[in-house]
Every structure is written in C-alpha cells, then in structure tokens.
Image (cartoon, rainbow, N blue to C red; front, side, top):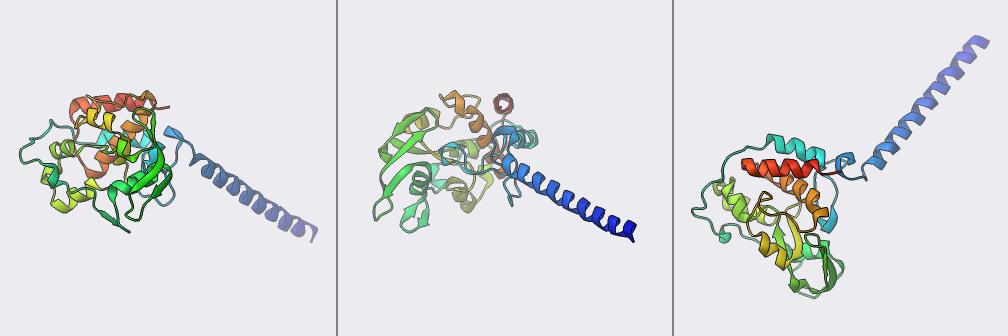
Length: 239
C-alpha cells in the first residue's frame, strides 16, 4: 500500500512539473513574439507569418528570415513593357467608409494625436516620415507612398491583372504597401526599385527591404536580377 501511494504521489509530481514547464515554454514564446528581425515569431493566427505593425504604422512586415525565404521563391525576370500603363488603371484612395478614403486611413494609423474633421480629413497630428526621419504637423506635407510603386508593379506582373485586383493593390491596408512619408522623398523615389533608390534614413533600410519583399511575394510579382541581389544584401544587414 505504501508503494502504491508513493507511485500516485510521484505521478502527480511529474504531471505538475510537466505543466509548469509547458507554461514556461508558452511564456517564452509569447515574449519572443515581441522582438524584431530574425527573432520575431509569426503573429498568432497569421497563416502568412506576418508580424505586427512596424515603424510608421506599416502593417504585416515579415521578419528578415521570412523575407529571405520569400525572396528565394520570387520569379526573376527583366522588367516587362510599360505599354498601356496609367495610374488610372490602379484606382486609388478608394472609400473606406465613414467618409474616409484610403489616404486618410493611412494618415490616421501612421500619426500621433491625429484629429479629423467631419469629412475625415486630418486637420492636426504629428507624423514622422520614416524615409528621412523628419517630423511633420501638417498632413499636406505628406504623400502616401506605395511601397512597391504602381508602375513597378505593372512591369513585374500587374499588367495581367484585372481592374479589381489592381485597385486592391493600390489601396492595400493589410500588407506593408502604404505609408505616410515626406512628399520630397516620395517624389525622389518615383517608380524606382531598391536597386536604384533606398530611404535616406539608413536605419529604415532593413524594414524597407522586408516590406518590399513581403508585398512582391504576396502579389506574386517578379523581381529583376539586380533587384533581387540588392534586396538580399539589404536583408543580410538586418540584425
């Protein structure tokens, strides 16, 4: 009888220890999901392994490891023709309800203390342009940048899309495609890829490469050889 009671106690102790260890493991995983770069775990419930919003309110930025894996799977080919391209084929700043359009939604999520009028226009707030680390208090000084420019997307596959898909691409609030930046840097960037243009703020270049790769991967857009080489180098610099 003593031996049997001891066995029951031992089994119970083992069970408690196992539960404790499992709890520690879960806590460690939860803690790890809040880190950055290669250490960041996929967000819970996200089948694509996208992370939470990054600097500048940019959502869905993959980790450096995820971006490297995605980059290796992208189709490499020269840019396609610009024949037939126009921005009108990518209807943008679509209505987002409550009198808001896509531009105002991006300004709202990217800024601090943003106040909007009855027409959903940002009348005050504070925004930091992650491309050049400059701060603004007037929304009119900001452009909404398409991470992968519309013309670049056209040359790398969007030419074959229907209008609905192009509109979704131009107004994508879920992936790291839209961010508020200084008008100066946005217009300097134009439709160039990372092989020809990178943010002046060097500290943002890792995030830029991760976001660019994430968007191209989701939409199955191609990359040029020079583009892929540059992105690989930028991703290797992520810590």
